[in-house]
Length: 348
Image 1 (tube, rainbow, N blue to C red):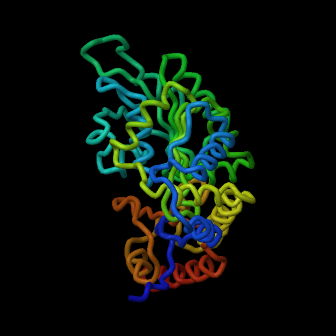
Image 2: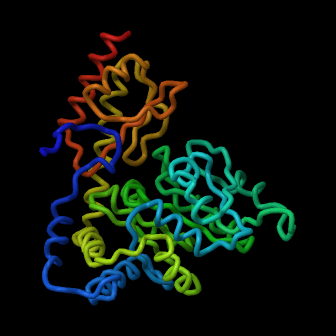
Image 3: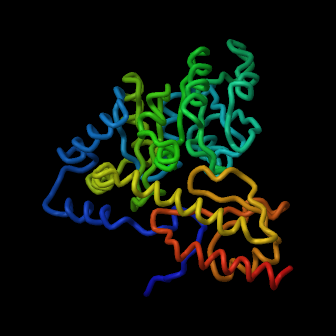
């Protein structure tokens, strides 16, 4: 069965695997190694990630982003505790109820401006502390970059961390697109996350050129023992762990994470410039990482989706989302912008 050569802007998950990642997987595909991460190579990569983020609580490789988030939250919360997050967050919208069904947690959500939480939005949700009748907030979770493609400035993350810690809470970062955020800010991975007060990090690789793999980064040593057992219980412990580790080895080598993220961000900026000049297209959100959101007439959207894959984000308004990835090309952008202009012309 041959694979399709169709291109699109549906998701950075739809992209191919970076050749350097494939090479790294192939390089460790020799001989036998203890399973479940009990091999020297995996431990070296875990140490490398711990050094990269300054983690004292350990690194736990998992299969996917939802799994990373659930494992993080399970390690931090007891059954009567809750997680504060944006109402647009992946936790709340796109994880099939996993935080509730698997972790058994209540999500306390806040409406936001362009997907970003602020202390003013979070503070009202930190209430009824010590009241046995009320769920107790334990974790404040933010996404960097957000589901709406926006990026927190370092000071914004620090302010949220300070608020959480002031109330004895932990700060979790869903870093599925942390690489894109760090590239946009022009700072390192640690400087965009754990150096700012993040206690638990879901560090994403799948959206940035990996086959499958995310890393749970724990900054606090007391979180490491729960994570050791909860990763297995949450069905996120890989038996052939070296093949997950190899991908992160590649991602950290010669700044592959940064090269990939910079390119994806640059293609999003190029796409926004190209489609923003097309009459009938309204860019709806700041283009800060690798996502472009726009409102396009539904008839034009439907016609365009026959040629390119992408999602309608909000059916009522006609808002769509276009994601760029490490393998998006200038030719992809130009072809899409041209097709969009033609679709609008024909389907006015």
